[in-house]
Length: 267
View 1 (cartoon, rainbow, N blue to C red):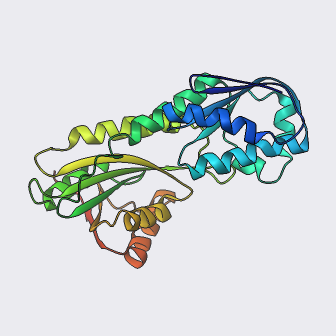
View 2 (spheres, rainbow, N blue to C red):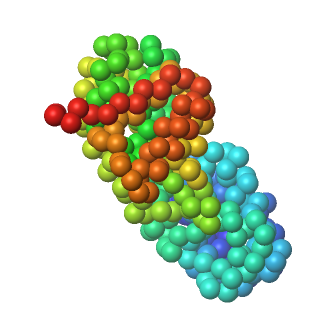
């Protein structure tokens, strides 16, 4: 097995006969200094892999996630893909991209979406108003409600887009269309906010279920209020059930004040 590094990519060539993560880890740590958002393992030149070799990727996932970074495997040959999927743990935890370009786009999107929040807090400014961004609710009205309840210049409004990842995929799996939509939604909603009516920050949370994610994230961020805006109350169907479950869950489980309001139909 030949291991090479360049920019944010570790390239593997040859056959992976045994678990070589310790060797790859040394190379990866050098890359993570300049690319803390995550790195890519390019497997396009791999010729084969054994059961023990496949465990390399499982150990890689554990170490990178412990460091709060991401690792995305790209260009897996078919025979290597088949072997990885046959190993318990590897199959469910391995984020895979079709190409290095696709993997890099996913890492870049995550860095862009979350860069405005990380390192931005210099201390809590008054109340922290938490506005979830999910399908089925009025995103712009949620921001309007938050700013109406904010003390000018003191409250912090946190916009969080919840990107749902199905359980058949690893939580950090590249999802180009959904990531692009998340970025676009945050940009659109942020543009609606008046910076004079509360300090606005935004980020993306990858979750299995948006409702559970809202409760957990609001508690983790010590939010003072969760604010939900509705353009209307859906009368029936899947969207109605989803909104009803959201409201019921927040009322029962949220640790903080919950504000749910319907937009004036005459506006």
